[in-house]
Amino acid sequence: MARREIEEGSLVALPLGRRKLQRRWGILHWRGKRLNLAEETFIGLCDSACAPLRLPSGKPVEKSNGGE
Image (tube, rainbow, N blue to C red; front, side):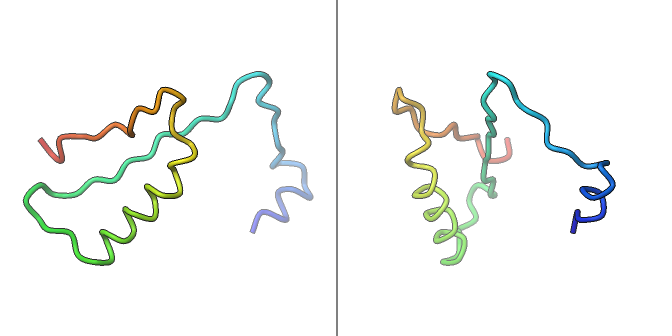
């Protein structure tokens, strides 16, 4: 997919230095709308996969108000 750019040298990896790569993810859904089985399963899988990445304080992932 990016082979040409890599070969041309227009796509390169840059070192991050001492900074760590950090991303925040979220899942939104309508309040009052019941999630179907596939949605509940997906959210459960995401939660399980992210459990080892939680903050050392043990704080849960931030949750939004769901569309307010």
